[in-house]
Amino acid sequence: MKRLLTGLQPSGNLHIGNYLGALKPFADMYSQYESFLMVVDYHALTSLKDSKLLSQNIASVVRDYVAAGIDPQKAVIFQQSQVQEHTELAWIFECLVTVPFLELSHAYKDKIAKGLEANAGLFNYPMLMAADILLYDTDVVPVGADQRQHIEYAREAAAKFNKAYGDTFKEPKEFIQEATAILPGTDGKKMSKSYGNTIPLFGTKDEIAKAVMSIVTDSAGGRPEHVYAIHSHFKDSASLEMLYDANQNNYKALKEALIQDIESVVAPMRERRSEITDDEVRAILREGSDKARAVASIKMATVRERIGVVL
Image (tube, rainbow, N blue to C red; front, side):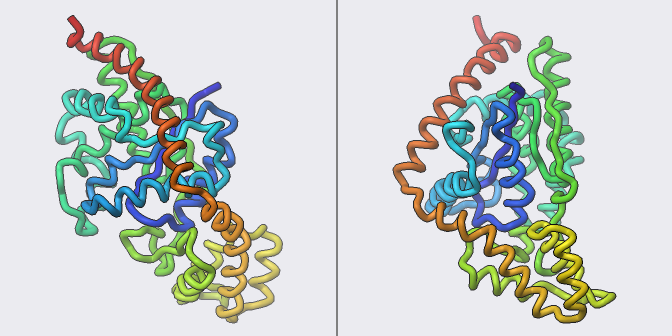
């Protein structure tokens, strides 16, 4: 089987954009691959400086994975920080790429423009992500359209290492579901925690309703386009067209319908999530991290030998 790898950052509560862009695609396809699913906690350190909150978020992400339908017996769910080979390999890649190359990162420029601190970890982020991917001889990485460049960075890191030290790393391919690549938030911009425009994935029905009712509706033609764009991921196109044709200019009715359709998807997952205990979370991460470490250590043994640090 080909190997698939993806990850979620424990930087806060998930929203429906995370679900549609990452969790659901992974849940739909992971059984077709040998799948690795990371909680990328070291990546979160670029912006999150609250240790208690980070710890809570790590456990929360595991619950999110399982609630979304991912079986920890069929996918390796692991914690990035428990596999030290990630940071070791990232350093080696950082010694191969140039500063101007890293300065081209769209994600870095975007986060700085949003006011995030320009720390070195944020700048070097693509090389840690490259290490995350390449350690496992990954074939496929499901990502959003805005993360396509990260996979290009991983391929470049692999190519530079292979050229310098011999064929060692497989160059991965991205898997992008174009239909869910960019989901509008409540203000019409891309849904993002940094914009504060999200609809919470595992919020209460009232919290979901409050977010949906706040979606901007300055639309032409009698149809609220941002509402429709979100709704299209929760209802089939034929039913959706009938609903919107029957409720032209009735934005309140359309938003209420969207609330119900989101709730029908989220409610069963929310209930399942509430049943996952702390002991189950710890067991999942312990077992998964052991499996991931076993794979990563073999690859790093080859890397150390190739770069000449093994005597």
